[in-house]
Image (cartoon, rainbow, N blue to C red; front, side):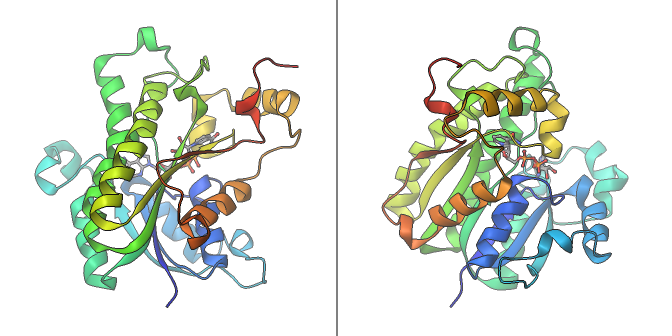
Length: 286
Ligand code: NAD
């Protein structure tokens, strides 16, 4: 039987989530997607109208099939957590069952089990503010959307994951080195995500034989990265200073994710895997 993957955090064809879905599809996996509720409408409309068809092409010439798109807001674990104003919001009231618990339940009803869980989402409302100017709410919101969202997804999907399965998240080197401009507590959120990768690898490994890894990816001009505002500078910096002087493609991260999700990586868990043209290894810019 082919593997079944749930990828949380796809709302267009530019980000890492899309590329990971493609690499998994090319390796024969069935693709389920979790899309942020406010972005769902435009994503589904674009899909339906064929706007992504060019980027759906797999190496063998066929088109990636997406079996189902689920609305998801990973900052809410269950309906009781959703504030009234969000419930009443037009963009949310048009969809249902989009809290983490409900999505896991719906996937279980639809398909029974999954093999691969991918977390490719982050949000920091104050990302453009330095840490010293970040509010408590902004900091906690970054951690909630970018770090606890993975704990929650794993917690709720673990019971429906087949033993031997794998989970992957995406992190950024700003967790461990100073990257001015990656603010709002997002650097803190990535540090939490990386630390949690280790603890969750232990807990999910012992309990369910599930592997937990994170990919520390180099800079990509995604929608989220453009919102931060310094992405072109980071791409130029990498081109100039990394051991491999080429622009990083999303596919390179997708392929690494497909490897980590596969039996080829059966002894790799609790790892931060750098897919960044080697930039992390440099001590000085040259
Ligand atoms: P992206 O915009 O394609 O993906 C981020 C996704 O998160 C979006 O689809 C957005 O709708 C979704 N999202 C935000 N809040 C959400 C919520 N509450 N619930 C559900 N979904 C939500 O951008 P990307 O850069 O591909 O980001 C994917 C991952 O890669 C993130 O974890 C990001 O931090 C990480 N990353 C990106 C870069 C880069 O340079 N682009 C570098 C290293 C790591």
